[in-house]
Length: 110
Image (cartoon, rainbow, N blue to C red; front, side):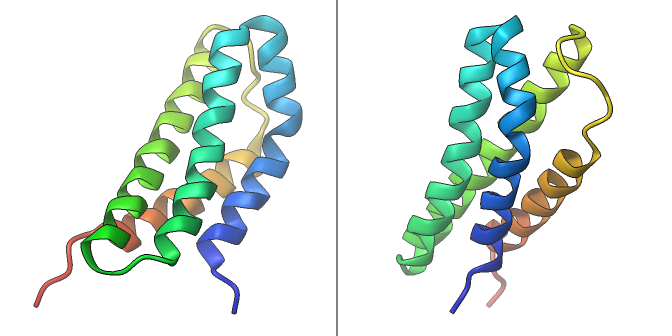
C-alpha cells in the first residue's frame, strides 16, 4: 500500500535537485539546511507511518515543521536573489506536502 504523503515528499525531493544545487553554489549553508529539511519531511513521514497513537502524530508534526522550514529557506533564497521565482513545480509539491502534513498532524476530536 502506498502512502501518498511520503510519495509526494519524494517527488518534492526530485524537483528540488536542480534548485538546491543552484542554491548551494550561492550559499552552501542555506542549501544544506534546505536539503536536510526536505529529507526530514520524507523520513519523518515514513517513520510516523509505522508508529501509532501520539508517537505517530509526533513524527508527522516534525515532518510538517520541516516542510515549513523548507518553505522559509526557499523564500529566503529568493529574497536574496539566489533562486528565481520560476520554480512552480517545487512550490506546488511543497503546498501539497504542507496540506497533507497539516491534515495528518492536526489534533483529532473525540
